[in-house]
Image 1: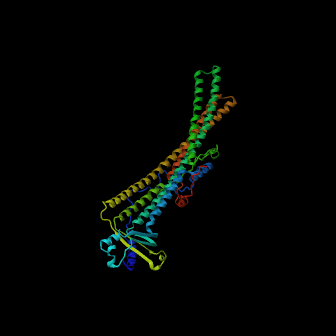
Image 2: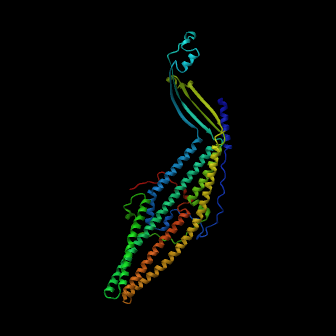
Image 3: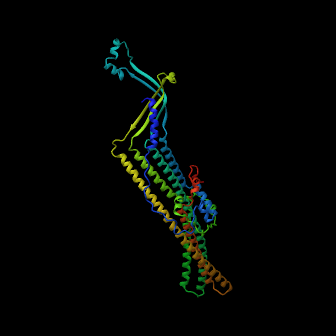
Length: 503
């Protein structure tokens, strides 16, 4: 094709490609109408916590969270997956640009005259036997060296938008991967807070169990004294000893549970933490977080929960993939060629008169491929339906998780309040029995019994405080935790954000 005709063809093809792009299909209907607000909302409004764990008002917890964000291996893996998605997006965008590569070559041709072209000349009667007739003397060997310098190029005109749809699908997958990172971040932080609250409770239980053992030791000593004086029988003595052994048996179990919880915290913090005693001092006092929680509305929830955002982006990726696979059914228009300098003498290689060009325009259309292309379209459409269903499920799950978390938080708050009142009454009774014993009005056994009851209520109250923290944590996770629309860029993963140091 003459070069003066090729240029208008290329320009016209580019213009047509912009106007004939196949649009992806719409999103399948999979989500029912959402309610205006949550049934269990306490305060209506937008829920946008940034560093949501600070609601526990514990500076030690804040330090632990910082350590986890700096060295957690799961987050490092999530960052690597985001980097992979970004690289795949760049790869998917590359067909939008022409392929251009330099060409430098040396072609050395050397063959005997009686083989190859020389043999063909002999068959035509123009070989060595015809030297005298035509006046040409062929050498024993034929050789030629050609030097080439130039460039090869190729470009496929995105006539139906296949490459653009593939690139958009990769971009949506990249956004989904970034949302997956935020989901992993939320999961790691939630597990850290949960483990921290567990350690707080176990340490409290360990201290209370030690005090209960001391009370039972005193009650045993009292029972021994009463038995020696004949004021009680062996059954009372054995009951005191049994209670002591039972209380002492609780300590090893608590120690094992505490060691397991601390080990899980070491893993979350990304290494062997022999200095955990310095990281977690004896005094750990997270707030019970009794203040009301603004729950927001489902529309806000869609922007706050990264798992919902990831599901939405995967629907978009599936839509664009369907558009790309449909474009595969239509003809492809490509342009390729080479241009440069060529010579049999190295010294003449850069002579402008030695230029060459090779241009070709190809139109390739699918005719018969055993239904492979149409099966690819059917596969992409089925994947779109699957992604839409997953998105609908994620939305419905998110709304119901928030509803359940609100109810659970309120139930935990009421239980904590009731147990706190019971603990106050037990404390008052213990103080009264102590005063009666000191005044000589009451007996020592009543004082020890009241003290044991008070310590028991303290143990139950500590567990209720832990459960209240768990309930608050479940609500944070259901609402998306640290996910906020205006902080999205600040939370995007960077390759250098995390390290996996085990110092």
